[in-house]
Amino acid sequence: MSRARTAALFTVPLALAGVLATAAAPAGAASPRPGPSLTCQGKGVDSKAVVRAHAETVIDAPLSTVWKLQTDVERWPGWQAHVTSADRLDQGHFRPGSAFRWTTPVPPNPVTPATSLDITSTVKQLKAGSCIRWTGPATGEGLHIDGVHVWNFTKVLGGVLVRTEETHTGEQVEANVPFATGILQQGLDAWLVELKTAAEARSC
Image (tube, rainbow, N blue to C red; front, side):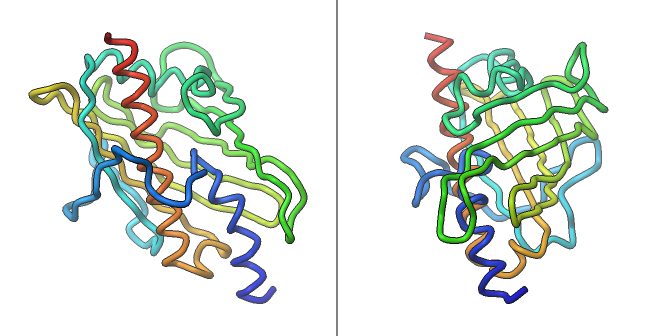
């Protein structure tokens, strides 16, 4: 498969995965700052991945509210515009070993028909109220991505500092690293904006 075709295959699906729907970062998204990679219980993102992004924001809401929104994955469609379904694959408290499957729509385009991107995530590390690390594949027609995603939550003056970092590997995203990195950055920024909006609305 040519590099041009693999790049085209991932363009629209990846742009929608994980609330990647805008052409630019949403208003209110925090600019990423360089620094050490995030970790959860000593584990971080894929150190060998060439597609990576990070973002952070302060949310004016209790930590318990932010944490519940982020870990109650079956309710993600209620506040994340481009998550069309989300299902836990286990029961009980959100914990290491918990798994969930979520989908996001892919509109028709010149390369692929209308379809859905199916993402299966498994929690590898978690410290309640502090951090989460999950991994897993995202698959769609003509597309496969392996992702590692780390979240850190810290109480600060004015609310909760939420920081996130994610890496992607896979033939399609690695065919155009700058583009894939930009799309991933947009996704993290959008996720934080929607998390902030939802948490602050519940705290009014």
